[in-house]
Length: 93
Image (cartoon, rainbow, N blue to C red; front, side):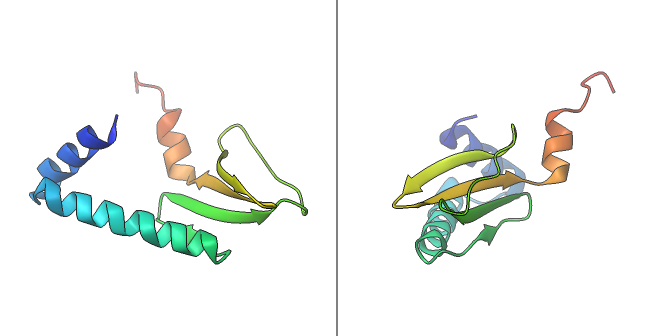
């Protein structure tokens, strides 16, 4: 699902206009970026953006994904147990 479709779906589920959804998304993105710049993690309930010092080493599983790299640090995206379980749930159940 791309960003446009995601905003449309959130708008439909919440009753909020797409412009409001977009404003919240931009603010969330800015907060995550500011926290990363300060070496802080950000948890959004189902996903966590975690800054890791590259010199310490990385733990990278199949479900963890590196999304940014800069000057000796990386940002690791860690998904919640519930999200992992939803992704691998048998569709026939």
